[in-house]
Amino acid sequence: MTKIAEITNTFFAYLKRPDLYPELRRKIWKNLFNRSSALRGKEEAEIWCKSNAISEKKFIEDVLKLSFVPFEILFPAEFAQALEEQSKTPVKMGGAGSLSVIYYINEFVKSQNSIETGVAYGWSSFAALASLVERNGTLYSSDMPYILQNQSEDFVGCVIPEKYKKNWKLFRFADKESLPKIFEDQNSFNVVHYDSDKTYDGRMWAYNILWDKLEKGGVFMSDDIGDNAAFKDYCEKNKRKPYIIEFDGKYAGVIIKE
Ligand SMILES: C[S@@+](CC[C@H](N)C(=O)[O-])C[C@H]1O[C@@H](n2cnc3c(N)ncnc32)[C@H](O)[C@@H]1O
Image 1 (cartoon, rainbow, N blue to C red):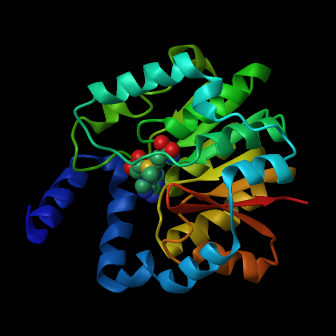
Image 2: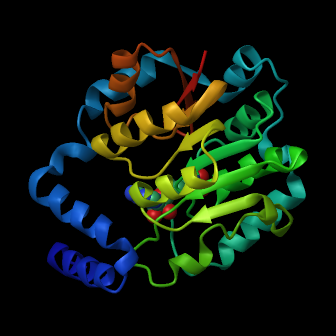
C-alpha cells in the first residue's frame, strides 16, 4: 500500500468510528505539527538503556527477591493454548514483552488492582491476570483497535484464558478516553503497565497521570523505552530510580514507588 493510500484508508476507517473521533483529531494534529514525537531522542535513549540494562532473571531474583521460573514454564498448558489461539487469528497485532516480569511484578505487590494500556492479542493481560486471579483481583485494560484491520477488534485479548476473563475489564477507546472511564471504576492501582501509544508526547501524558494513580509500594512498568527518550526524561525530571530490563533485544523500564 502506498503512503497516500494508507493515509486515505486510515482516515475513512476512523470516519466509520465516531467513538474514535477524538483520536482522529489528535492524529491529524500530530501528523501536521508534531511528526518527530515517535523517535525523539531515540539515539540517547538506546545508549542509556544499553548501559544500564539487566536481565529479567536478575531483576526478578535480585530486585524483587522472588525465585525465577519463566512464565511459560509456570503455566505450560495455558501458554500452549494461547499460542494456538494466536495462530488461528487472521490479523497481525503488536507482540508481547517480558511476560515473566509482568507476572512477577503483580506477584511482588500481591496486586489487587492493575492497569495496562495496550492489549492486542492479550499476552501482557494473560501474564498479569495469571497472578491477579489468585487473589480475585482485577485487571483494567485500555486498548484502541488497529484501525486498518476491520476484524482486529474481534481478536483483542484472544490469548487470555477464558477462566481469567471474569477478572478482566477492557475499555476499547484511545487512552485519552479510556483512562478517565477506568478511573471512574477504580482510582488507584498496585501495578501500572504502559504499552500503547509509544510516541514521546503520548508517553509523557500517560506516565504523569498513571504515576499519580499508583499506590505507594506499587510498581510502574513501561515497554519499549528505547524507542525515544520519554522514559529517560521522565525519570530524570522526576528523580525516579528506574530498573531497565533487556528482553528480546528491547528494553522495559520499571520503577518501584517508594
Ligand atoms: C504493542 S501492542 C500491545 C501488546 C500487549 N501489551 C502485549 O503484551 O501483548 C499495542 C496496543 O496498543 C494499542 N494502542 C495504540 N495506541 C493507543 C492509544 N492511544 N490508546 C489505546 N490503545 C492504543 C494498539 O492498537 C495495540 O493494540
